[in-house]
Length: 365
Image 1 (cartoon, rainbow, N blue to C red):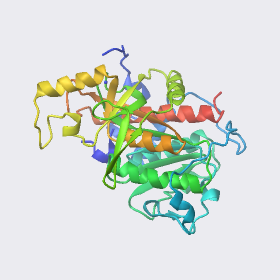
Image 2 (image 1 turned 180 degrees about the horizontal axis):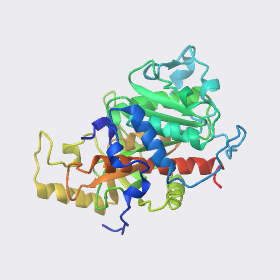
Image 3 (image 1 turned 90 degrees about the horizontal axis):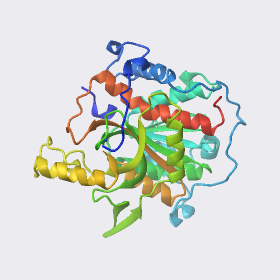
């Protein structure tokens, strides 16, 4: 069985992918997801086999960014603070030189699995041709058990050590955005990469979110602040979504589409599953709801996109959500794919984002 921490949608015709073409090792060698070291090597090697080729060297002055779109925090009280302690990241404005450490960051990739994000960091290190040894890529948040973070060149790879959904990613986003602000970063793109349940599309399809919607299919995020409900927009950057979609066309046999993503507060009842400890609705009502979601443009379901879209939009950050689907919820509720197939599917978003980053940095042939 796949551990929850290592997670791995009818209008569009898709082509079945020959998964075995992308394995450098036979599936029997795929280690347990609890083992980070072996899995990291396994993932990095398989990712390298399908990404389009590009130059292996990266000069420090090679950067296509010319603008100065800084990260803005929407909190006047921060200016009056003598020190800002980013408690959950084990960082602070007095204890660390944040501009020197992180001022060159342009891309932040947020995922849920520490093992996958470490593998992604190692892969980006190789693709960017960085001089430092792979052993020097350390978890910057090693002093805390909340999150883990790796920096490779201008790229952050960020994940939660435990927990899932809006509360966990909300805490991370508050401190991550403050970190980018204190580090004087500019022109930053944040991308959530992960897994999801599809609606009316085949498992293994990558969905690039154009709009994150709530359980009523509305583009909004509702946050209870004190005793008020505050509603915020969840529109994502359309040009960024289109750019990611165009990048996906360069990867062989890559199934992708742009659509709405529904964000829920719960994995079971909130997503209309019939297999939880509690269930107060019929199979017919479940299917009717999911079909309404599909008609409204929803192509996948996950648990973090609305808060990411809302917070990044308010703080002047371009953001995207790229998630692979592990099942079609119109067919079933449980994820029952073979372990090696799940590992394969989990890599599709990372392959796309690595291609996107290298193109942005002008490293493609």
